[in-house]
Length: 474
Ligand SMILES: Cc1cc2nc3c(=O)[nH]c(=O)nc-3n(C[C@H](O)[C@H](O)[C@H](O)COP(=O)(O)OP(=O)(O)OC[C@H]3O[C@@H](n4cnc5c(N)ncnc54)[C@H](O)[C@@H]3O)c2cc1C
Image (cartoon, rainbow, N blue to C red; front, side, top):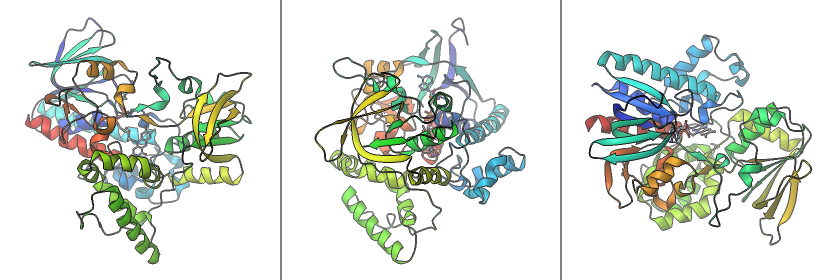
């Protein structure tokens, strides 16, 4: 679409065409009735976003196919699709995992194809009813709301209007989000850092050079895969506040849903006590601790939304690192690589927090770190620095036009604990005065503050289905 394109009216305008925006469109197309949906997405393809644009086969989902269906009514949807895809020769390397299709951890790029195919099928269904979904390529830099609807402005000045708007803008990766400090300076970490998923940039590094990685979660694991693929064989030092690594995801048997039976559990402390007891019981029966832990997942949104801000802060302060490393687990092949690198002595993990990043000198980047329990910072240098500290959930700190404009116009307000944006439980956004907006909605990662876990495939798939039903009812 060019700047000359006339104002275009839609029923629903979706900002962002990653997994959330695309799955919302799929659900809207499947519902009876006639509607025109426009998805504004700056990438060339819908359905991929950051996560599923991965081109590296080693960048896999962190759950197996049986856990990653985008259809809340059919948990086998991905397994069936993947079986056909493999049978058609689509993923010849799948046999290295030596497991049935349901237990495979597919590359995220292949998962993106699955989402795109579901969109194509839904488009065909929608076309019979006169419904359509169009991809408008561009970045939304402003949004206004009035009695007639939602009005978007794109970078090239294109204007789009619709009855309803949906923010499906995903996560703002810390690696791509320069942090602005109160003194107006922009930090040098992101300026000095290599993208954790950029295998091409890693090929330019000295294969024997020392690589420093900040952050020890799943993005770090992806970075190890990228480095290995790029031919890097030198030392790697990983630094994070607690020095905790993600556990490997095993395929544990089921376990009774103990939280469903006990709604008295509300605080993080009660949850941890109950979970510890369940894990001890599992251990005594020779069952993996991952079995009881996995039953907790479905209750997190309820527990988080019931909790007070004080309890949420307690969770973040004391339990978050533990939750991240135990719950957000590593796919087995990546975990094997991590184990091997540690075993070879090439990978060292340190509990230390980053204090400052110096300028690059003589091909080396120098950083200052404070080890856990120590007072004095020390300096470390390496050939490359990778920032895998994850996501910037505080929209006030995101240096992008749309979040800034939405805040400046008072159309949104920060969510609980400044995580994402505030909304009602059905995703209708709250404005700066706390009023529920009946035209602007959000789903997925922007609702982090509302549900805590609002990013995984299954979270997004459920929210998309519920929001589609709400929009159609309106
Ligand atoms: C690297 C990575 C790996 C992951 N792996 C897993 C996994 O294994 N299992 C799992 O369950 N979950 C995983 N997730 C989490 C989850 O599936 C994703 O975050 C999910 O993709 C969320 O989809 P989304 O559409 O909300 O966000 P995104 O995928 O981030 O998509 C948002 C889209 O919005 C667009 N956009 C943003 N602002 C604008 C604007 N102003 N104008 C136009 N377009 C805009 C962006 O270009 C982007 O394409 C992973 C996430 C990441 C980042």
